[in-house]
Image (cartoon, rainbow, N blue to C red):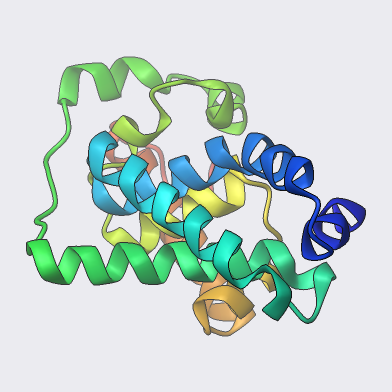
Length: 177
């Protein structure tokens, strides 16, 4: 990815297209986890790529690109949420309970296309962290840097969110498999 970013910084338009292809679904998942709205998520991701296109030459540390673009996306989501006064939506209890029946399914949560629907009851911050950690494979350190929180706080929030999910499913004790 670093070489691709460097090519884009140097004016290669095909590199930009490849970046969009590689990151679009990841950014959409994060945006949808924050906004609970596919249309708004599409718009915010598009705005994020426009920002990238306009500011390519300003990218200083190519190795931090993924973190940079994620920060831009989250900031755009936050701005939109303030403008639109977005409220969180409820989830479909029946579909949620059918979603996650075993620990193996929990570990493979990112393989399910309805992932966002099943974490929608979590608060915005928890949804974002869970989405970044399980779906986008960000490390705890990367998430901490992006969200400007400590690594221990991220670990706590992941554990808390996992326990909320387990509790919604009816009766798994904290930390037990």
